[in-house]
Amino acid sequence: MTPDDQYRLRFHEVESVFDGLMMTVRPALAGRGASFEDKSNRSGFDWTAPYYLWSGVFVEQEQRGSHTYRVAVWLEYLEALAPAHERSLSIRRRSEVFQTGKESAFVDEETDLVPLAGLGGEELVRRISAAIATGWLRVDGVRC
Image (tube, rainbow, N blue to C red; front, top):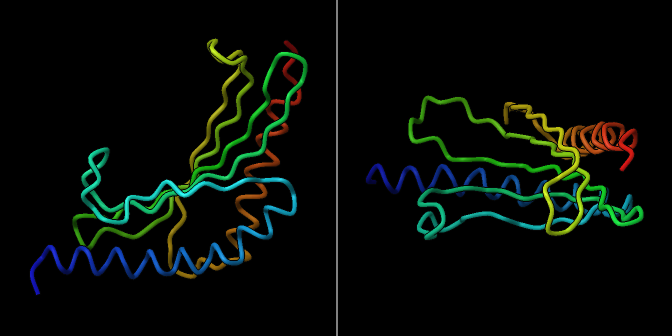
């Protein structure tokens, strides 16, 4: 087996775990109004990113007058080139208030790296829900 084959195999192992977790996570978060979009590069040869990436974003947003209030939580797993690198999931929250076509009036971001070892569906739902709740706390105080 070539190093490229090993790299691809490592990614597809994690990919199947995340896809399985999404069977639990997506319905739990859809119930609270969060939409989900898969942003993965599963082939490793996408023109936008020449690497294996499992990625998705949960989004909640609402219109308040002429402004959009949005909380997005990105989940990203990039297959490490070095096998010894600890596998982790990046959970990145972005809260913002904006008007279409204009610069955001407010932006707040936070990123947390979570080791994959022992990460289950309930824990992932808890972490994403907490990030969304924190995001709404950040934007709710913004007056435009």
